Every structure is written in C-alpha cells, then in structure tokens.
Length: 194
Image (cartoon, rainbow, N blue to C red):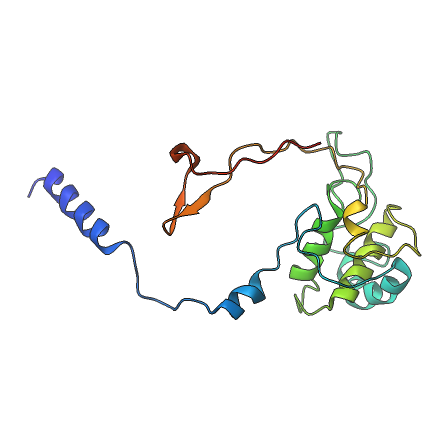
C-alpha cells in the first residue's frame, strides 16, 4: 500500500474516532468546583479570610522557615523569598517575591496551592493570608499590622509590577467542545492595561 493511501486511511480512522481514549470519567460539578481555585491578579477568585504579618510570623517559622530560612534568605536548594529589590535589571538578578513577582495575589495563590512543600494545599485561607502578609513584610512591602484580605491584597503594589510586558494575544474560546484558535475568529481579546 502506498504511503499516501496509508496516510488517508490513518486520517480517516482518527477523524472517525474523535480521539476518545475511553479512559477515566467526566468529573462531577462538585469535583470541578473543588479544583476551580484560580486567583487572578485583580483578586477575582480570592476567598474570604484575613491575616497580618504579625499573625503569619509564627506560621512561617513553623511551616516555611525550615526550607526558606528564618528571614526568607533560603536554605540549601530552597529559594530565597526576601530581598533582591533593584537587582532584576542587572546581569545577575536575585529573583525573590519582593524583587520579581508582579502581583501579591499570585504569591497568595502559589502559597495556597503549593505550600508547604511537604503538605501542599493544607493551609486554611486565614493562614495563607497571614503567611502571605509575613512574606511580603520580609521585603518591606506591607506593614506588620496591615490586614490582608480579598479586598486589600489586590491593592498591594509590588515593586516589579511594571516589569513584565502584557500579552495581548487573543485568548482561546471553547466552541462545540473544541478549543477554538483565534484564527477562526471566536476568541476574546485581553483589554489593554490601564
């Protein structure tokens, strides 16, 4: 059989199947809601809760300091969290929460999802707000008594907030169960940043 004919047969077989592998199951709405925890830079998706750096200090010492050091200096292969301001534009930048991250909400989201390293996702929202406040306090971004919550956290101005170029490419949109590329004219565009 010629290569061309094999290619046509393979294409027809794959198109007819729709690439269904019949593995797993469709998640329930409750399962989807349980994983729908994205927090955006503007604070959309943040849950209720509050915390201050003073409250976060003890939690940080217990849950974070073994890897990140007592003052965010990092230990071993674990990254440094504090300091480094003003080094991002130099040849050897020190990338920390205080020098590199553009949004405080991203810090909160990362801590909630990935920390502590030995038990990710185990912290309550109040604990995440408190640890986030303490980590931001280590870089002098928030005061020790400043309360962070779903309204105040998005208002925190990070030192590197203007250090990234916004991506204005169109976002994909789902249509008929398939991911629709922008070239088909069904994508939303990201509004310009003010």
